[in-house]
Image (cartoon, rainbow, N blue to C red; front, top):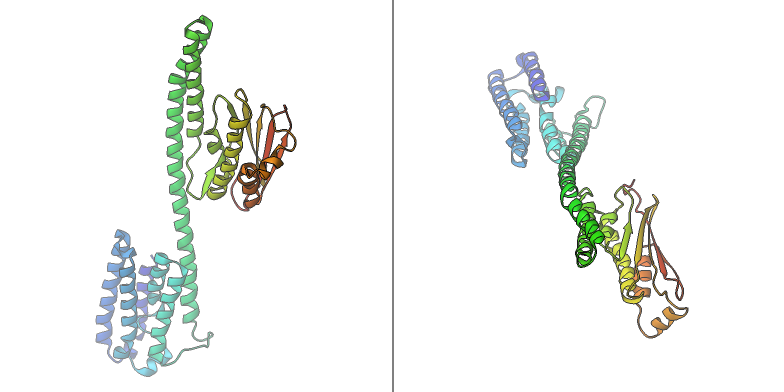
Length: 364
């Protein structure tokens, strides 16, 4: 629409100055070229191939060439007293095209090229903004249109991403319902009936129960919406460690952290769980609780095992075994968080791992 309006303005300008030109016939021939190029640019833009760097560069070149053709259709005095032919408004189309394609900086650079062509015609660069505001207009248009185009592209990309996530989540929920209404209910029924019958079927019931719990964990982790590579859902990562001996409790909403922080945090939790499996005793169970406190995230890892006697950690460090000091405490300190241990002989162990949330990261 702007291109059409600028062509109309250029036509009005041509009609008003036609008698003042030295070569009006050449001016009308060039104006016919202007209309043909404008129509080609409009079609190219609507079809898509006009939104490519090569085409925009060609548009800038054509605009500059038509501006410089003022020397062939008008006198030097006319060029000094008037705006360049075929009007600064029409020349601004090149600035707008560059700004839409590549953003504010290329748009402003294209505007400076238009200003430079005008300066070549006049033989000087005008700094009198009251009489010649071409440079202000071109830079302002390049900046404003470029920023608007970037914002529009980001909004469009976010909308597309949200649409894909919504579609993926809907499909996951559909599959989850099918699994829950089918396989999980059958496994639960087999487990319950097997325990009621007893005897040899008790072992079958136990296996069915384990598979039911594993399938429920898989469905729960699959229900989490997919995220991009910059953030990770700590809830989904922790649910992957759930088992018959590890109980995991997480918030209903995803707990998002930067991917690198989430991996290191999860590694610290994993090390704590590995210690439970290795040292807490054969029948020990672990309980993991994830809390999103807004400005920080806390994971508690508690077990009902044999605990750690007083002085045992110091002895381990003296013997060169620094798994707790390095893998848990050291990792949390490196992340800018903290790790607190509560334990005692016969009373199990409890780790409380706290990590400050990165400012600006979305959460509940």
